[in-house]
Length: 251
Image (cartoon, rainbow, N blue to C red; front, top):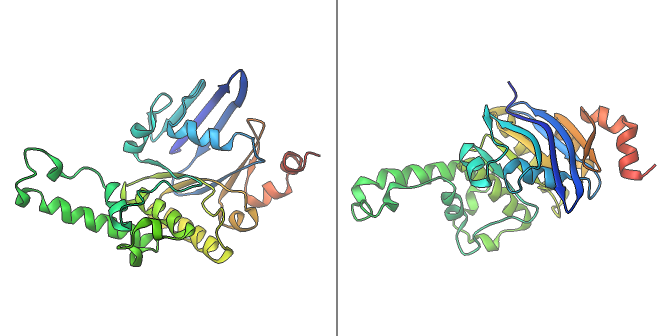
């Protein structure tokens, strides 16, 4: 059974249809790309899936749950994480502290138990282990004590991935993870994404414009134009599809 399914999903802003009947199905443990020219509806679709925006029609199912009317916090608790083109970090916290925030509640935060460290110190240790494991998988464990505002752009994006892993995400929606990143690090980021999909069964749905780098790591691609899915298939099939060329070049 697919981990994520969308049926006839619609979104309207001020009378303008931005998502016009989107049908999409994603299987677990695969890397999906969502491509298309600016204004085609890609980011709006990601926002609707995650619950940042409310759909105006259709149905979205994630891991057997109807999430059509759920908000972002609810979908996150079910295992869906969202990253942004500009990383959303706590800049006054270290890399490790940022990741710890995503590990969930610690019983030491309880008013009644906070004063009794022995009752919750095990939770604290487990949270640190989870966070450090996520940082190791994201290739930035060596940065754990650095304040997050000292990270490079690429490292900041890796930290967002680490936070998603620490939060036990099963599907990760990513908006341009290699925007502004040098090619060597961009390839490293996508190699990490592909490894996580294969070894941890995490599903990725990624918006990306740097197709010369990213398509080599995709299992399947959806191409959007004017609020619709105009083509879908393997990277080779998408590259050869005339409808994709028309949407990008306006021919």
